[in-house]
Image 1 (cartoon, rainbow, N blue to C red):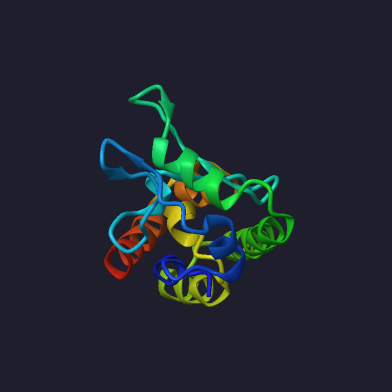
Image 2 (cartoon, helix red, strand yellow):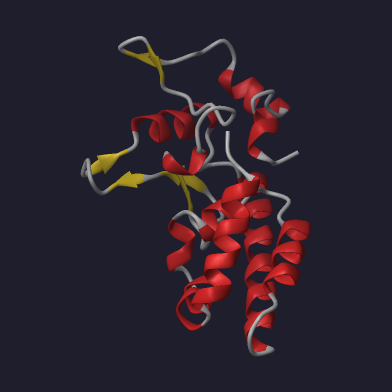
Length: 162
């Protein structure tokens, strides 16, 4: 239900909030289309609140216009139940990575399989390919086990995408 391509035909609440609005800027859609673009290029996840927020683009020194509009229209930063689900998933992913780190050198195939099984909100791309890689315990995995990290990233890059 929470995998990005499934959100094109959005949940009832998102559909209600979106209604018939389809914001444009210079004839370009301002809502993220997860079937043709990586949502994490425009959106970010706040692991403290569980909210999905607009992503800050360092190169442009500004917030992603698509991220801002998507968050605004779908109220992604003001929906407690949605945030709670994302936060719960992040906590499970973090606990699994911490458990894997505690065992010594993680077995990549087992780690990826286990992470995929519990990622019911589509956060793995954010964790390994997006800004989540700077958040502990993911940053610890990246720093202390670079080979495992690289293998996880490679596995995710080949299995996801629009």
